[in-house]
Length: 173
Image 1: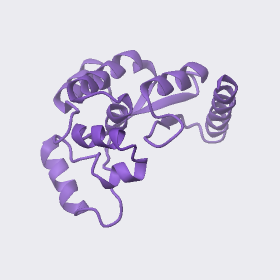
Image 2 (image 1 turned 30 degrees about the vertical axis):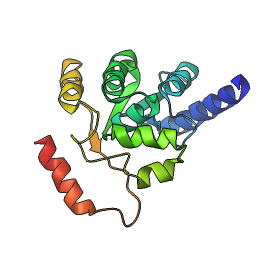
Image 3 (image 1 turned 60 degrees about the vertical axis):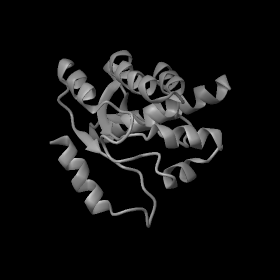
Image 4 (image 1 turned 120 degrees about the vertical axis):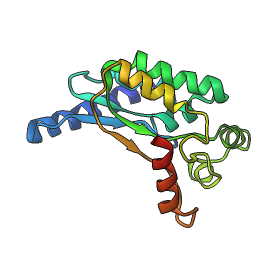
């Protein structure tokens, strides 16, 4: 509902203003599967309603791909396009991959976010649909100088996080 969006955006701006006034730090919003701001349309809507001086975006490649609801190649293209259309608000980046077969299954079976994570929707880098060489090229083209966090959503008992982190690091090399 439009009124709820306005309330959410005002609250986001208020928090960001308080953080900036008290600490001098900028605030970035992290869109996320299973949250109020998940799809590309919701991300765009929040940015449209918030102050570009106060609120930036953590562009999370895996959550963005998942949020598109598109198949592999189309989801990857949407991630790349987001770096163009949202560029002025991208103040931080998360590298995360999305396994398209699992994403399709989670939508078909109407799994919730935690069930999707448990099914492995966010896989190790290079094993999903996000085209990381193209993302890196886009970031370089745009002169991105900020941090990039490699992130992989897992639940307790899923896999071997240390080995997964090593494989993600090896992939990035």
